[in-house]
Length: 536
Image (cartoon, rainbow, N blue to C red; front, side, top):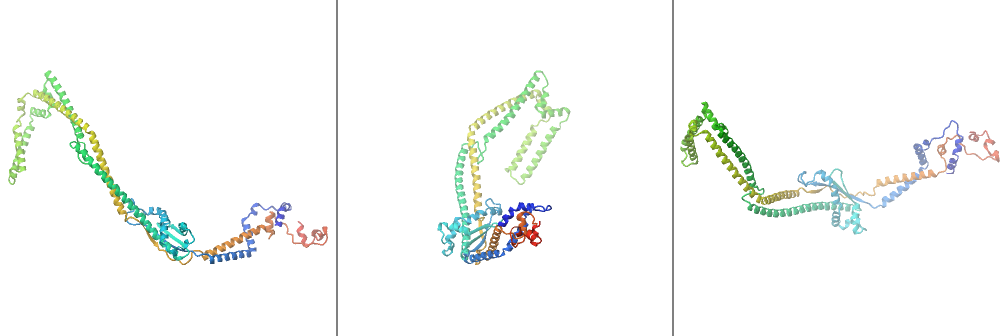
């Protein structure tokens, strides 16, 4: 250490005697990692007995630990969470993805208090050796420290292991943990299903009672307006529909009456002016006007055609009557129908005027048209007035019972809503019953075994840890000794500490006799080899 301090103090003086062509060592060279590592390895090699001693001590301690340490044995098993039955797209079903997402919940159930308490309750006394000396209220915490639960990534498989002082105890604990977990999962599933079924049954009974009450109320309201409203849940306001139809008919009749009144006014004005009223024939009766025009032009096809048509139909009916009478009686409905049609056709032939001239000769066309229009005007006005009175009467009656219809409609909608809700409850109860086979099951895929090989301590791991610890300790000791060492082991050490190149090496000198200059080698023996180091 004194030598290094002296070297540091002489650093500036040493730089003053550098050769002009020499340059100081740069800072990068002084912290070169490679050279430092090599220097440390040289220190390790020079102090290698220290490394051997450290390894011997650590291996001895490791051997003592391995011999005296308490043996720990481990038993492990694997179980898979399965969805039994059902469809993977069902509402309450669990897909593979959802099962993987729920694996932390199953891990929590396995390490939960209920599962562990059930396991401890079922364990024999001889397999509770791991809880000796532990307060009973701390058993669950001690249990969890020895129990290991993990889920294999992207699967629904859990790995369960337990460490114990006895291999048989480790096996028994794992087996009981699996049994308790499976029972707990089944219990939770059954409780959920039972609770769901109980709740659904209560809701169904309540809804059925409410539906029965609403149906009775609906029937009472419908009985009060049975002449207006239809039956069933979706009642129809017949009176309102009738009012709508009456309103449309009244509009048409009013329009027809207005047109007839306008035509009558025009015809009366024309009569007062002495004009020919036959000009209005086409507006009053287009069919009659066409026939008159045909007669005047010499074309009377309609009269003979219609007469011939009636005679032809009469002949066909008489032929059908003869054919039917061959195998049907006189009172048969078909015979009666044919006879009635024959009577109608004969009457039409008898009443039909033979020619248009007979019509023209019977009465004056103008007076006939005017009288007809007047009659039509009176009839249309009277019909429109009667229809208006009927419309007002029906509207008043509908207005009086509008509140009753609103009540019936509201009750009907409520009945429909309750029936739909009952159907939904029935579907959910059906799904719940089917869900009993679509439950979650836990199946053991790897059974636990009695493992006689201890997992702690392990010989290989103990030796490896001792070797690593021995080498690490020896390297630390060597590094510390190297820091506090006061000797330079090589010129490189000296150059590194001084930060300057080494110009000469002064060997160990034998003290010369005499005093003053006579005791100095450069003065007393200038040509001796010992004086070469002082020439620079």
